Length: 164
Ligand SMILES: Cc1cc2nc3c(=O)[nH]c(=O)nc-3n(C[C@H](O)[C@H](O)[C@H](O)COP(=O)(O)O)c2cc1C
Image (cartoon, rainbow, N blue to C red; front, side, top):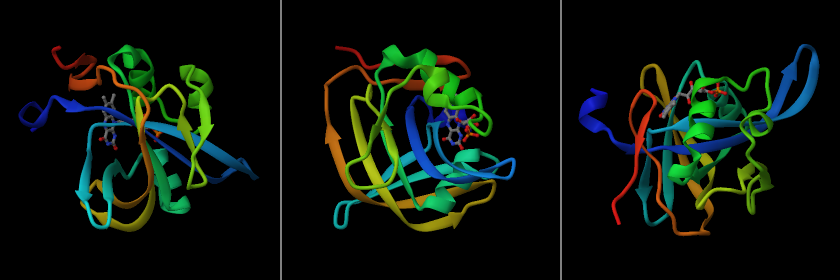
């Protein structure tokens, strides 16, 4: 099916939640690469993301009930692939991918400083769609910071962008 719906814009979704790491409670910030995301409504402003149930981020978002969608430029292929090929369960993906944490404006979550644009969401519903969960987010804040060529996923490790 993927060859029928791709290319799709790949985003980096950030999340933060309390997490029990080998018996010790800590606040965990994480990043997941996502192709499956969608605007859902203007009034109220709503945005949806679909996360696989096995993803660590799915667990964190279920717990914290918020997430940020970070729109990246094609220059960040390496970082996007890193976040899409490694779980953050036992590593700090911000550090490992070399991305900079910035506190969100309206939700208790980090976003990515290098992003061209971002949307902050509070989860108002979760729909079990099969092996994924569709998180329905009410938009709490959003901003377009910079114009730039966005990253779109074709398949595997291949990405593309828009023409001038
Ligand atoms: C380009 C790309 C797009 C992806 N899109 C999705 C997606 O839409 N939904 C999803 O659940 N996983 C997607 N993944 C896979 C997750 O990013 C990957 O499983 C990641 O390691 C999960 O990290 P986590 O365990 O720290 O949450 C994608 C991976 C790549 C490379």
